[in-house]
Length: 243
Image 1: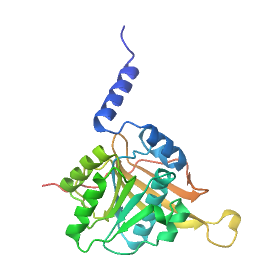
Image 2: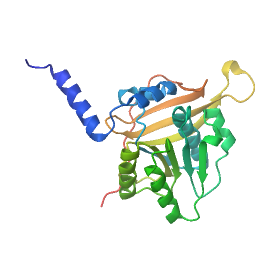
Image 3: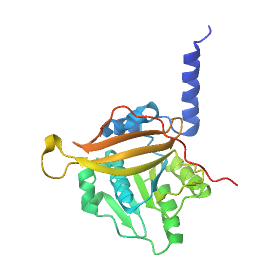
Image 4: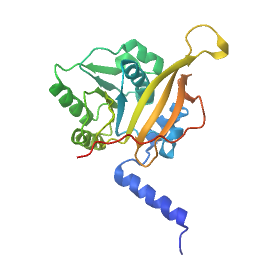
């Protein structure tokens, strides 16, 4: 019996996901359900935990916005017994602020290596450790070779890795599953009430495996991401370094 074309394509996509290690697991699907509208822009409406993700930072406000956004994504992994590592040369993160995004500071091991050489070594070793749910590292750059080693590490350990590194007009290709850039947007106060409103971000999904670039504005409310504008649209690709 001949199968319909759409059935054949669906099965081929599933086989590719298995080969690439991106087939949604029970953990991925369960944790993604806690993220609200964010998974709507991702393939299969599931955030690909257990892989490497990179976050481009173009300024100090973008770094703060990215840190908050990452914390909100990783929070579902730490709701029970999970712990994570946050690695960086500078002590810029304010741990109590993580509570707003669902992470208790005592669930996080903060590591501040003495130099860049130790920074890369600690990051790679942490990604190999099955005892961690996630690893966040603030790196000065991310090359394809380094990203490939990190991706191979998490494919074995199933740790979710998030790398923050500086934005530039020309970026090398990496082995990461996704590439993001998060920009802060003026918060909106409901019904024009005074005070601080809900955090909002312009979310640029610049690349994602088996998906397409997207852009959407999200706010953080009631421990969930909420789309400010339900309709998202395609983003142009960033030029990659050649030669």
